[in-house]
Length: 176
Image (cartoon, rainbow, N blue to C red; front, side, top):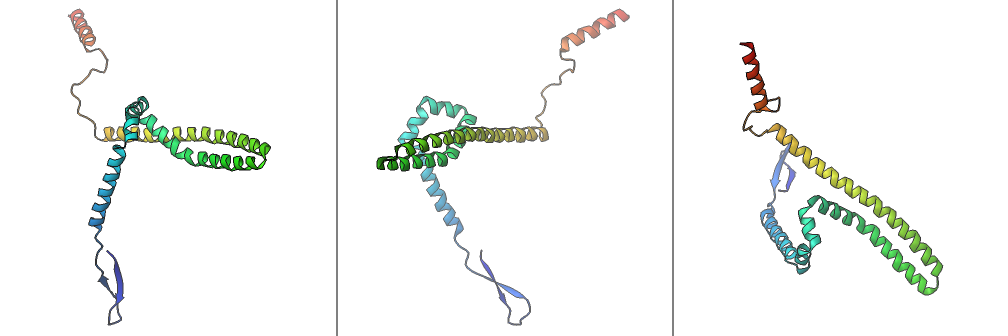
């Protein structure tokens, strides 16, 4: 809701003038419909369905930590790989003009740089995924600590209940 401050005719204080509220609920419903159609079209895409039926898709579906690590790595490595490919294309064009030595040097340096960047990104994506998993475990542990489940039976602290009972009975027999 957009409100404007308008001075009163008396000159003392302010009064609020209300404008028509925008139809946010209609906009949100329309956005929700568009997003659900987009998600449905992605899920029904033949390439997505084929990937999810492949062994790699099934493996990533069963191992969400690995899927998260792969997703973080792919997203973070897109820009360096794009820059590397741009450099390769530009130097290839320069090679067609006759700068073959410069192309080999730049591609070699670029390849080594890309290797270093991708190794660093793999460690960063692994660390980020680990941090997310550790956060999840800590939050779930705190929730279990704050709201503990009710115990079904009470256990003996000595470990083996039957052995403790038998030794107590034998001590009672010797004392009598």
